[in-house]
Image (cartoon, rainbow, N blue to C red; front, side, top):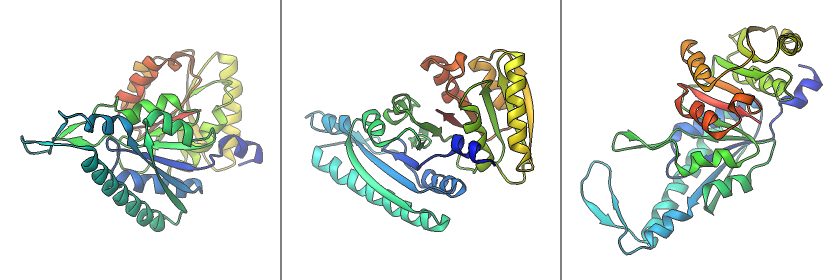
Length: 283
């Protein structure tokens, strides 16, 4: 890949954001694998949600253990102990999985509101990974958990995990003429399986803009012995993006953030929620 293309595709760090709603061993393992593929360090940020501590301070606070109907009292001291234990477990898991993948890692615990803390701790060139919601009583937590809401408050690229399997067949939805196109294509080539010689892409824009974008994409991929399975459209809706990802059996959906039809939180939120696979939003 040319130096010009590299400058568009480089992330500076991979950051795994963790809290009580988005934490599990597989998320860290996947984040470590992605960091290894991208040749980057991995940082884990464990956020103690300030709102949980406020709730625990209330005299009526109770918590229910999954699988039991009994409610027990909950106070700040108990919550602090449980948070520290969870953070320690996460740090141990991070060190172990980072060592297996040969990547450098760091771990940090902060207390505050997830959206604000994530925005503070990330930089524009970072890749933020948010794990799949944990199960509670055999039901998935809402995708509108505090950590999920943090997605809208950062300026960096975000990968929302859906399943633990590594990426093999990404589908890219790109805006023709966008400055983010080469960045998204570069990320896809690093994340896709080496056995996948063809990258599936949907180019959105006018025929002339799409033709120019396609020529640049095909030239960049040819340098790596890959080609592009290109489809063209002048516009695309959230429902059409979701359907395309579902029909193609893709394991990651890669979007550029400047797609006109998906710039508002409602439309983009629909894709992030309903897509059957992981979603990488490139900013």
